[in-house]
Length: 352
Image 1 (tube, rainbow, N blue to C red):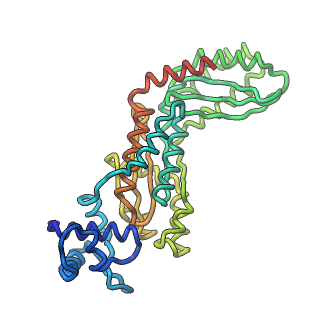
Image 2 (tube, rainbow, N blue to C red):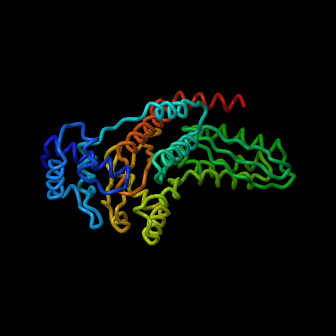
Image 3 (cartoon, helix red, strand yellow):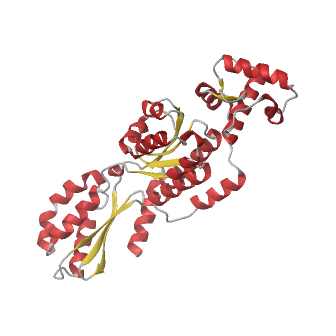
C-alpha cells in the first residue's frame, strides 16, 4: 500500500493521539501534531482516504476516527519511531548494572518494570533450565531437623527445597553428602542429573547414613528445572483500560493469561521482537487485543521471552523500545560470555 508523506503523517498522528487519549480523533485536534502547514479541510479529506483504504475507522458515537487493526499494523511496520526517554534509560541502566543478580531476579525486575511503565500486563517465559549445567549443590541447615537443598546452575539460576530429617542425620552427614555430590555431579547438564544421581546412589548409601532423605530432596530440586515457567505481572492494569471495561471480556482475558501452555506455544515464532495485533484465535476471541514479545538468549540454545499484553491501542513504540533494551541487557548479563560468569560464580560459592 502506497501512502503519501502527508497521509503517513496523519495516520501516525491519529494512532499516537488515540493511543494517548483513547478518544476518536477529529481533523482540528490533529493540526498541532502534524508539524506541517495544512488546513482542517485537507486533513478531513485525507482522513476520508485513509478510512476508505481500511487504515482508519469511524465510530458511531463520534465524528472522529480511530485506527483499524490494519492501521495499527501499518504504523508498526512503517511509521513508529523507537526511542527511550533519557531518564527511563538511565533508571534501567542502574538496574541492569547491578552485579551478583540471578537471572530469575533480573527477569522478575524486567517484567515488573514493563508492567509499571506501560500500564499493561507483562509476562516472562523463562528459558529451558534443563539445558544448563550444574555449578554447585549446597545443603544449608535450618535447625536440628530441617535443611534447605540448593541447586545453582551455569546461568546463576537456583532451585531450593526445604526438607525434614531426623536428629540422627548429623551436620557431618550433610557436609559429606554435598562434597560427594559436587565432586561427582559438577558440570553435568541439568537434564542428565537425575540419571547420573541414580548411578552414584550406591556410593552415597555407603558413605552417608539416611541418604534417602537427601536423595529425595535433591531430586525434587532437580525436577524444578524441568519445565519452562511463566510469571505474569500487572494483571490489575487491565482494569484501567477502557477496552476491557466489559466484565465478560476482562474475564476471558484473565483466563487466557492463566493458560501458560498457550504462551509457551508462541515462543517458536520467528524474529527477535514479534507484534501480534489480534492475529491469533485466542486474541480474536477476546477482541481488540495485542501481544508484543521479545526473545532473549541466556546460553547455547536457551531462549526466554518477555511479553506485554494489552489492547490494540497500545503504545507500541514505547513497549518495543523497552523490550528491545531489556532483552539486550539480559543477553549481555547472561548470554554469550557465560564461561567467565560460571568461573566467577563458582569462585564466589567456594569462598562462602
